[in-house]
Structure formats: C-alpha cells, structure tokens
Length: 114
Image (cartoon, rainbow, N blue to C red; front, top):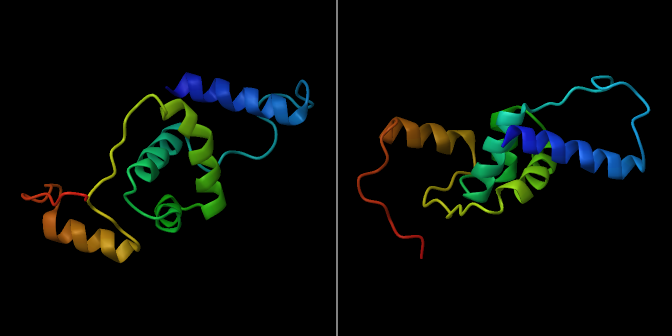
C-alpha cells in the first residue's frame, strides 16, 4: 500500500506542476505525516471514529493537513469496505474516557449503528 501511495502522490504533484520536478527529490518542505500515519488517519476517518478536528489534534497536525492526507489516500482505500464504527469521539477527553472504561478490550455488547 505504501509504494502505491508514494507513486500516487508523485503523480498528483506532477499533474499539479504540469511537468517534471524543478528541485531534486527530497528538497523542500517535509511531510507532517508519515505514510503509515496517513493511511491510519484515512482509515479512522472512513470508519468515522472521530471528527477531523479530533484526529488532527491526535496526530499533531492541522485539520487541513489531515483532510488533505485523507483525500489523497482515500482513492487507494476505495476497494476496501470500511463500515462505520459504533464508537464516536469528538474530543481527546472522550477517547480517554473510553479507554479508561474499556481499556484495550472492546465493549462486550456492541450497539447497532442504525
């Protein structure tokens, strides 16, 4: 998945520039999220675990950085089915309360989404 992500990002940048690179590979600003973090953020957004604001705070980036990462990774994840989670979080306090209550174990009884 990560090589496909790197290839897609390079292609999108090529399209945006309208041609070849003007600088050497690796020059310029560094990415705020690693490839693995970008994939994880996209999966969490697709499962609707938390809001973009919450996930951005948890990953230590701005909301626009997280949204851009999700938009770039989303097409690569389109072939996988990600059903929405029954857990919803809006703040880091909500996440901490959930972890305090359940730890790493999921709740015994899962409520239906509908």
